[in-house]
Image (cartoon, rainbow, N blue to C red; front, top):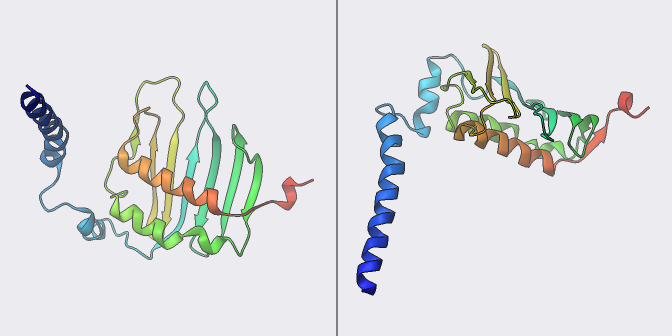
Length: 181
């Protein structure tokens, strides 16, 4: 009896894995992988090294969703503007000695690894109470903006936003002089 239940459990796990990974592999382009995302992006004229600014903006919902905008620049400067439901309200600048931890080049590489430049630009759903996530990337060849208000955020967008939030938590922020008055 115990062998039968273990076998059934293993079959259930196998079926679950098959159901999860089969659609993913079926939707992938032939030859598409994070390793060749840069190759595909060459067609879009955006390459590693051309990005000058990466911005994450989280927008309002009917509840207590955090509202803020944070921008990281290639010169290792960063700005945070907190609007509501966040521990930092106002305009802040990253302290120079802590902004070496802005990890701009790592964020830039992450954008390519997660194929940021490939997805559609707007993921919308008629969802009245979902905060928005907007990721804006400025490059020498233009600006790419991806926006979503879906409660189930596409994993690539979630990964980029989570990485940015993690960096925000590591930086020492100083309230902007104009906001300190």
